[in-house]
Amino acid sequence: MSKPSPEVYEQGRGMDAHNQAMREIRARKDRTYDPREPTRVWLDEDNTPDGVYDSLTIILNTGGCRWARAGGCTMCGYVAESVEGGTVAHEDLMTQVQTCLDHERENAEDPAGQVKIYTSGSFLDEREIPVETRQSIAETFADRDRIVVESLPDFVDREKIADFTDRGLATDVAVGLETATDRVRRDCVNKYFGFAEFERAAADAREAGAGVKAYLLMKPPFLSESEAIADMKRSIGRCADVAGCHTVSMNPCNVQRHTMVEDLFHADGYRPPWLWSVADVLESTADEDVIVVSDPVGHGSDRGPHNCGDCDDRVQRAIKDFDLRQEAAVFEQVSCACERTWEAVVERERTYSMPLAR
Image 1: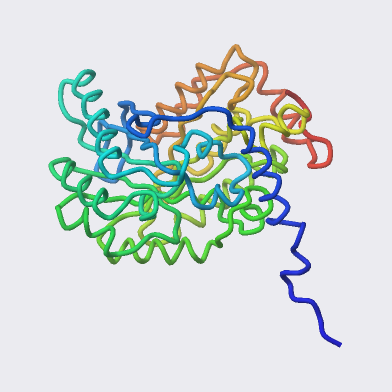
Image 2: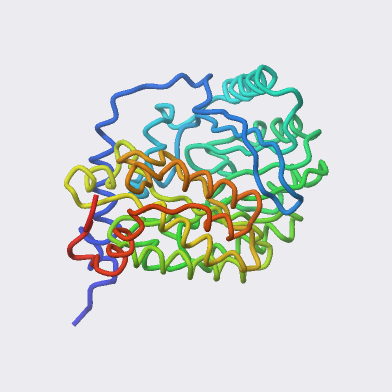
């Protein structure tokens, strides 16, 4: 008697069910976007292996993440901001780059030493960023000191990275790993690759002369506050052990539009992480052999990482201070009565009855 394949058991369940739900949620998108306009651009500071740099951060508007069009990650709404049709012409992408350069000239005295380039998916996916565009971007920023490009591990390839390293640019590949725990990445985030694929991508980047920056997600859906904290600490430790991975960027989950997280949020089934949790992880991992940074997006709002409202800005400033100094002592300068509530949540909240507090 024949036995069904594992794929049969997966139909309508697991990632298949997640993808079906995500496609239905994303179908609510009701806006269109100009292919000649970048999604976002801003100036900031970043801690790197070569010290603190002024950074020009660019989010190019592309045809969107390939995985997101199949369904995609439970928390990611970036594909909802992408251009319809799946592709953006080389000329339009370079117009976006020029818009970002104009923004830099208008708002900074000198060009930033580091440029960070993101898309709605993977910069190294040639269906999003054609070879011609990638090479033109590499030439455009060849006079900078450092560049960061984001990609899923599938598309990390030595020849693609060489477009940057061969021009003398210190190059980092930012990978949205989310967690070092394969089950959490699959069941909570709905991301398809395993930690071994991240290790392979890091090895390829290292052979091309580039470094790796791991992006981790603090508190994906379906984890309690304590589970999220524990998973993040484990994940940072595992990333620190991967050769070539010199930085971990811990991204506290926020509630983006057209996502499963947003549906859970409106149904009282999800609360973004406490800022105290972010501080706890940073303080606990300060001695790891890796730079750990965090930039809580939407801090202090209901849809972003937050505490009680009174102390959110103070804790956020301490987090930013830690990013630049990497000194856990910065958190000794902030306190609030709501820290006791957070401690109770960490101790008592369980997966089957969360969130325990809003």
